[in-house]
Image 1 (cartoon, helix red, strand yellow):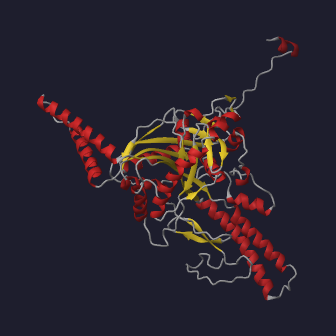
Image 2 (tube, helix red, strand yellow):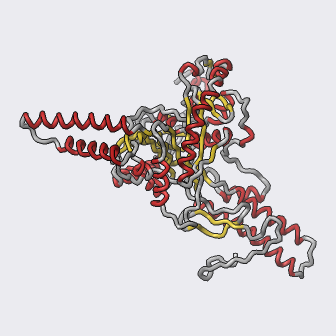
Image 3 (spheres, one colour):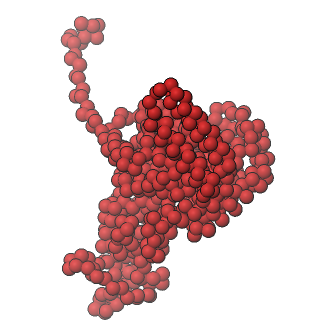
Length: 524
């Protein structure tokens, strides 16, 4: 018995806390951030039209626009052919990064539209004769708008529509001499940034030619590129640094609708407004706006602001043959990817292939003289090398070096494991080999951010234009008229269809033909 117990006359028994029930699917609470998230941001300055990185690179971004593929009866195979035309037109020496990421459609605009129209109709009939036809029409429209608020929220929460964007990054690195070196506590000296800015003219001169080549190639295939302004490019980077799961939105549309009716705002993690990005921002200001709250790196996954991510490095596939990587789009849940592309000189590649063929043939001859059995693996490689060299010499197809990274995301660990198994199964089906980036997940994620910086070493793989055209393809357009209301689903994309029957001035009465089974909601 201790002194405290002696003075109190008896020893108090310690009450043991009940053990917490832990969900095996959830990871432990991260507590304080265990990673310097600010250091993950490479952008240190905005110098219109460029973003400048701490590596001293000048970065430009372009977006492949969404196209209306169904209205012209186009198939994905036909779109791949257009993409193949683009890649085949790129000259040797062309380099770019192609990043695919997702962002959810924000239901706030559609819900606000219905809320606003309902209030407008109610105000309009407030002083009308309750027995007049206009009163009944206005009351019916107001009720329909309220019903559509609930219906729209239900649609968003059920379908969770996701927009997939494809961004192409061009970058120019003048040299290591311009890299900002005087860094104190994560802050870059203004003199170093000023030194980097001196390379703007040479960057402009170098990139102008590459831009014209790239835009001409895409425009020739009917895919005009859209150049992103520095604020738009920064918001694209923000999206890649703040992952989300398409099946687990942070805020439901139903909650947004309820709070909007009550006149309250609900917290959502939205990207900064474009006006917030200004050219006079300091590096630490840019970092604070771009970086996530916390990043935890584990052996085989990352946790970023509550979202779990697991990255894969695609290291082997069938060269010169379509790999049908566009089937990634059939996966449930969210996936993210980035592709580093470099078009090689066909003459140089053919010379290297010829050297490799001679080397392999000599090895076979030596083994045959020694009475050793034929190595069929070597024989297959010889055939593949011969086939590639013949295509280069006869068809003039320029080989394309690529490095390819893919991420899967989820909220729960079990769900992430299921999604990763699904993707691994797809890889085996289409003949693609990939490995998890154990202990280098953070480096892989930094390589995914569309800034032309590759932090994970990976051996380059050769492909040709027909094979690479099956990797990514132009995005489908969402059928949505501005300030429209929900009318149904697009069967090909599972996205909601929106039209505007009321009109901007509330005096249009177009005629709609609605066909459906009884009770399907035609009247609403």
